[in-house]
Length: 54
Image 1 (cartoon, rainbow, N blue to C red):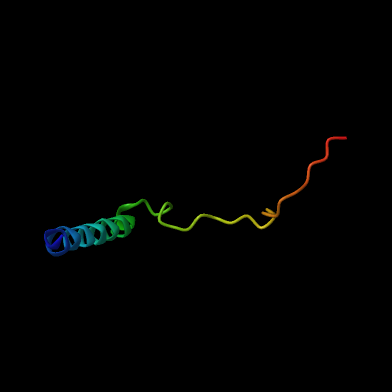
Image 2 (image 1 turned 45 degrees about the vertical axis):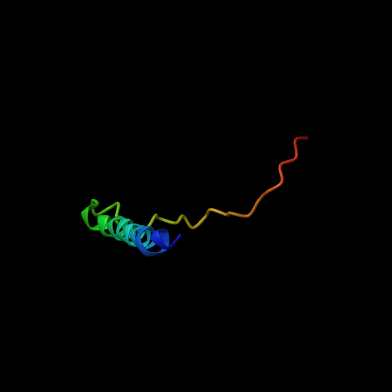
């Protein structure tokens, strides 16, 4: 158990950090239009609606 706690666990933590850092840094290399947030349409309502088939 000490081998896991002293060797494997720190390696996994550093590996997850590096993967997250690479994923966030990859936005630099995206085309300009893809690096922006997604557009939000003003007329769209996200509230659920009831459909009655009459």
